[in-house]
Image (tube, rainbow, N blue to C red):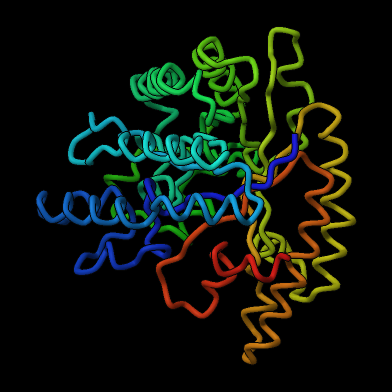
Length: 364
């Protein structure tokens, strides 16, 4: 396994910072409120225009020419158009498979957003809310959705695998503190108390069972060369004893890495500090966990606090090259990686660090 991948973030699952024009004229910070603040006709018009133009055939050709072999496509729970007021987008995932197969690429279907959210992030659909795991009917809906996707794409040549849940926030990360004290709410504040009510971190026991249930729903419909990728819930080392039985096959562990996250943990904003934390802390974890699963870095970028603080354009570009070099050496300890993300529709000064189509020149 040698994944050289890119995410299609901001295409079928929206993030305001990736495509801010979609949110113009609203106070919405996430998809939940965008779909409810815009008049229905305007919402549908914006979504169709965005989806049909954000990713086109030439993008698949470009990625193949850059040596990319796999695309991670975040999808929403409403992809089949069965959850009002959202508008479905399954035809665009069909299009992606057609294009991937035409240009020799493969696709990882990543269920990035579930009803009620699994993390409280904007990319979880509704900021500051994490209620999905406490709603059994929605958990069952999610499992049926995953099975439906497996049936639809399981024998497609273009399928690399399915990821049943992106970035769940669990009690293993937050501890026993109540949701109202979790740091996520400071970054992604909930709109109001009524929407947030009932939120709580997902319990690790629940997440493990969900992964096993999702595996049982998905894998019987997938060809033997397809994979099932689980996110580590930001606790990479806690999965050593998971899915070790012979009945589990082709399970891959997904971990996400950003310099911003290690800075939040106390890492100074400097190339030497970044290199030290990657080589001293990240390498050993990757090497250890690779004894149990193929490990893939599902998200990474060139962004860093160090680069942001540089006013000179040439210095900032040198910082991007540094970030690329440090991280790509790290991915040699894994089965591959997916850059976040392919395209940014923003003129933010640090957008280049997140946009593969621009950042690729610093990764040569």
